[in-house]
Amino acid sequence: MLEIYITHHEEMNSTKETSSVAGKSKQGGETQTERPQVQYLGIDRPWVEASIWTENMLMALENGVRGGKWFSLIDKVAKPKNLHSAWEKVRKNKGAAGVDQITIGKFEAKKIQYLAEIKVALEKEKYLPSAIRRKEIPKGGGKMRPLGIPVVKDRVVQAAIKHAIEPIFEKEFLQMSYGFRPGRGAKDALREVDKAIKEGYVWVMDADIQGYFDNIPHDMLMEKVERRISDGKLLKIIELFLKAKIMDEMNEWVPDKGTPQGGVLSPLLANIYLHDLDVVMAKAGFKMFRYADDFVVLTKDERSAREAYELVKAWTTEHGLTMHPDKTHIGNCMIEGQGFEFLGYRFESGKRQVRKKSMDKFKDKIRERTKRTCGMSLEKVIAGLNPVLKGWFEYFKHVHCWTFTSLDAWIRRRLRAILRQHEKRPGRGRTLKDHMRWPNKFFKAKNLFSLNDAWILNLHQSRSGNR
Image (cartoon, rainbow, N blue to C red):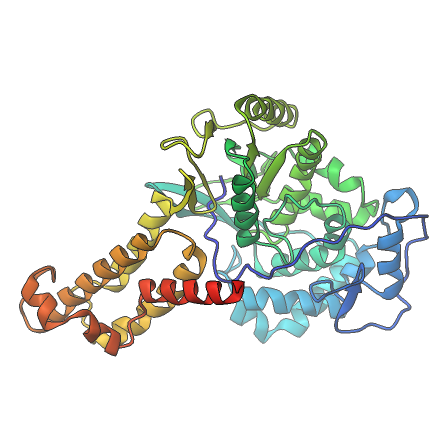
């Protein structure tokens, strides 16, 4: 599964609008006045790129285009305003340099030249993606995940393409899909899962697609893209990105499947590929909740859960994917030991808990910032801790309160160990004497963020809001 560390950056609560479309119109041109924020299906959608999506095009998006396919998009991708907007997004996302060693800073120093070169190459059909630098990053449990790092130029072009095609596919994506979509995120998915369980959908089919991003068949993916995009020049560039050479420290090869995690287009392409699964499950009447390749199906009985499993298994097999034999399970989440994990949480016996892998990852971050021999003042250590604690609480604030009280105590013990080290008295800060010398109120006075205090405050605010 995609290891989400669903951070504080993902959430803007909104729901996707659906509309019945009557009639077909010719695809809109570019003659309309551009504006900084556009109306998308009657709702302000600041993520829709105004330099591409004019009033005429938005109207065509709503009413439908001839044959259901969009053409003449490459010229819109290559527009200077679109390329500049794409560059700004890449710059804000930062990220490492690719195989050419051109960093964000180096690109910015010559951005006018580089963006002009990209524009000309796209217009003359001479744009060729560079190789992708492959890097292994920790996944948890001692495992590693391959990350693909395109060069900055390629990231800009991918972002520009995304501006052009994302609204086309967003219009079709279903409510059950939450990952890497504008205005939707992990908290929305978790909220709906919690609601479904309370409504009696307590049987779960928890599935895992083995190495999803690395195994998406290129030919089948391109067929799905081509259902809505008929611009041959744009399709060629997308395919070139899929087949870009991959290089690590020792080897290089040209992939025949997969879309690299780390590419700007990869999340959108991954959603396009799994959209058909969403449709199949929706038509069968199942409640499925999907975040990229991480998904669960909730039902009211075991038989339905097993039917969902067979349906998913058949679809994945037909589409060149494999369900992980050891990571797919069916159970009643109200029974202890039969719960399921989704987006960092564990749902079991009517409660939400932090899953073990997420808790271990969080503790590793705290350990890294609270080494007894760090040599920093307590104030600096706390200043480094607080943003981590606040972000983690914001995501996991719905778990049982005992989680926060125990974590607070554990964090304070680590800080007491640092204070002992300052006094040349190494120790773990666990003694009664240590606690009496540096009581809880001492750390509160030092402005240490308390997870338990934040939970109590959140509880009071929730109750006040419900009155």
